[in-house]
Image (cartoon, rainbow, N blue to C red; front, side, top):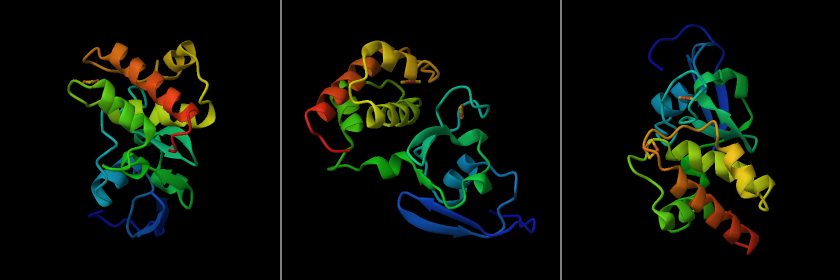
Length: 166
Ligand code: FES
Ligand code: FES
């Protein structure tokens, strides 16, 4: 953060690591801090208004839109970004399923789709097609890849029910 405004130091828990930052303005969004201060570019800036889902992260395991959350509002809470979900060689089942289903065109929406789906399947691995559709209805894909995305999430659900570990 370039400008200091006298805000309290910000203490975050991001992807299992404690991160402390100085000079983060009270109004700074979580998305801004993740991308600009911590170099975590998994969450994307789409609308900036909480309406497209591109910026989705998990806060205490719940999908949340980082573009409208004040960073200071999630101090000491567990924030997970796409980078913390899985990595090459140890993908989260949702990430692996998206790869298998080739559920991307430009890929801009994928962070949000994956994070939203991972949060859903963590609490409901039995999620029906209708439930998955409802859960992802607020995540926009301008490329129209919805059918492949739905296929990927259903594949991930099958894997998780079969014991694949997140
Ligand atoms: S960028 Fe956050 S919902 Fe669109
Ligand atoms: S794949 Fe391009 S916005 Fe979804």
